[in-house]
Image (tube, rainbow, N blue to C red; front, side):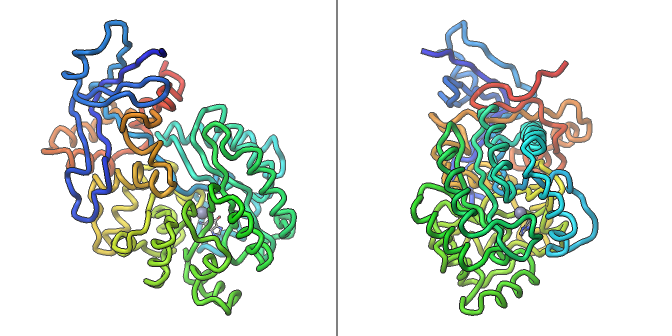
Length: 435
Ligand code: GUN
Ligand code: ZN
């Protein structure tokens, strides 16, 4: 029987979707709580006063009493090869791709370059309290091997896949329907289900894949229903108009993915800004998920996500940073951007719902809520410890908060990576201990 370890602090997690009305029963909070971990999984969570009574004397207790303990953040959409072009100035989506993104991605056929970036990227995720992510690689198989190998070394739960793109991008970045299929299949067979790694079939977006390539992607998805699908959808108006030109026989952008068998459970689409109601309903009905990426949507001037419409349709939604279109890997900053973007739509985001979108909701979007997203017994013990002691303003604001919602809201709006004291993956510290 392996050892039990205990973590004592202000513990908060979501039990279900709080919805628009912000159902207060959707969240559980222990102002002095104890999280018990055995074998990398949650053994129990509850009030410290109660759980300490039955705890054996030799159980190690990590004292985080001044800190908050939250489930690890889950980033539903991020590009690791775009780290080096984060914060690139002045373009809208399609020009930004041509000017910055494609040239940056061209380096990732070099395994050593991909490895170095993957290592840096995952260390940054962990430094920000993000323990899991759905990650775009590049068209090069080397880029996928690099991110999976680095995630495996860190014992992280992570999704990735080779980007499929065989047109409307630089020749040097193009695959073709046959190599795209074969390389994806080989990577899927190598990595899917290894430890905590999951493969995602990844057509970049409809404009950069031919009819033949989308057909092949659909065939692969059909043969491997347990594998994921990851792409972009309706991010900018110009992109939507381009898709209508390229696929005149399809009724809509969502219809394109649906036609090729790419709209189903375990498919996740970034952005979903410029959709018809029928598209949103089709996504919800199929079990596909939306990655809401507010930082990127504001930075690239793409548009404002309609969370209420997605929720009313019953669509799965998780938060994504979309770095390099997004400007931070930090989920607290992303929540801050989500709040502000939704304010512009008259849809203020409650603190509890924001927590949900970054943890349990994201896990549901990724069909991983049986393993991740909260501290239910048996789930994987990925969590983050946030400490405000060295942040005078945050600390001062929190001492003036009257209730959990108010405190959590201020924590999220004012917080960033400086709050992260430690990130735990399967119950083990993931960051070097502070000197
Ligand atoms: N659409 C197609 N490719 C991309 C990408 O790399 N980033 C974003 N934000 N949108 C895309
Ligand atoms: Zn993206």
